[in-house]
Amino acid sequence: MTNEDLRQIEARGITVQNVEKQIDNFKKGFPWLEIVAPATPEKGIKIPSQAEIDEDIAYCDSAQTEGRCKFVPASGAASRMFKDLYAGLDKAKAGESVEGTPAGTFVSNIGKFAFYDTSLFEGADARTVLSRTLSDEGLGYGAKPKGVLKFHKYADGEIRTAIAEHLVEAQEYMRNADGTADVVVTISPEHRNLFEEALREVQSEYEKRYGVRYKVTFTYQDKATDTIAVDMENRPFRNADGSLLFRPAGHGALIHNLNSLNAELVSIKNIDNVACERLLPVTARFKKILMGEALKLRDRIFGYIYALDQIASSQILNPGPSMLQAYEALQEDVYATDEVQQLCNEIETFLFEELCIEMPLAKNCRDRADQLRKKLNRPIRVCGMVRNEGEPGGGPFIIREKDGSTSLQILEGAQIDKSDKKACAALASATHFNPVDLVCCLKDSNGEKFNLMEFVDENTGFISTKSSQGRELKALELPGLWNGAMSRWNTLFVEVPLETFNPVKSVNDLLRPAHQA
Image (cartoon, rainbow, N blue to C red; front, side, top):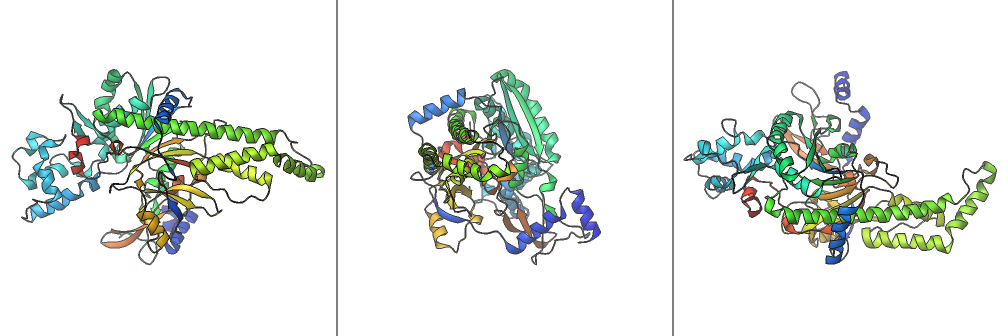
């Protein structure tokens, strides 16, 4: 690399070593994960009984937490949401009909969208409708973020953006004891004014209507998490001016934003996954179920850690060199007792039956207890899983770790080796997928924040083919936020109904019943 390259890298807050590692990843690729089996209701996905549901909700409402927060990934423009409209506009400009295409569906139903404006669309032909939706001559939606788009129109005439619906959700199930609702939204810096304007339009009104005080924080994806692009020969891709091309590294970069939160209990839900308020009772009910499961899991794990620590604290502290051999013998004797082994047996059974964690063989009794404590002392995530009906999303699997243990993981299709018959069979027999509906516990048994960066699997990134300036390139995404970035968390999968999952990936999704008041 040239001196100018080094200055460019330094200015972005990235180390040369990190860039070299990224280029090495392009050359070597990422190893496939060994899939043991899909996670299913038979093994790996919990379906709570009615008694457990009642207990979860009560636990969620009463459990002590050091702050609750709703985390909403909302970076980037909504251009992909309007991909079909851009294709339709190209056809219309060429004099072709859009009838029978997604763009044609959009035009014929324009009056059903919350952003319908008679002054823009009444009596307009297909080309004009599409152009005025996308371009700055009209709504300019092709370049705006999803969070500020008008999603829902209510019978009383109220119109809500996606971010407004997230505020309504937050007050329903994420209130803190002091009556506040913390909402952290990840955005792009260039969109901040749009989000602030959307917030000003509703915040005060909603605080009066729902009796809540919102604490809304906007956070940016750190430029230092961008990754270098390479050409098809794995050489650094250069722009026309000779500079290096860096690209956003995907939602996995948001683990840094999540790591900066001080709340103990965090709910994660994408900006486009909201529905009309009539569905809020079922949404809030199952969100509380996930939170109750997370908090019960937290407290059970903390109890086991406390029990193990009590054993350790009962022994000689800080032995001198002459006492070391006797100390180690004492440790082994203590850990070999029936009482301690029964505790270890109970923990191993809990890990296997509840979290699908199969422990590797330990060297001795003390090593067994140490391994168990390390496995317990991790951030917790409880992930909602819905029945697979063809919607996009990562799937739940049981995988084999390098140390021989097993764990629950969310895998994308790109992480599965299609030449591996066993992996393909597991993929084909999967019953559920993850709608990005997560609840996380981010503090340890001492109330200290985990450093989430210590639990990322750096070997689970993605490599994709893109283009820039008419030339092909390879792009690198960091381990996904709910994939490799949370790989070493303690994970529980819980089934939730499809009614709780209402994403807007394409603009025509807003025509679905969940988005029509």
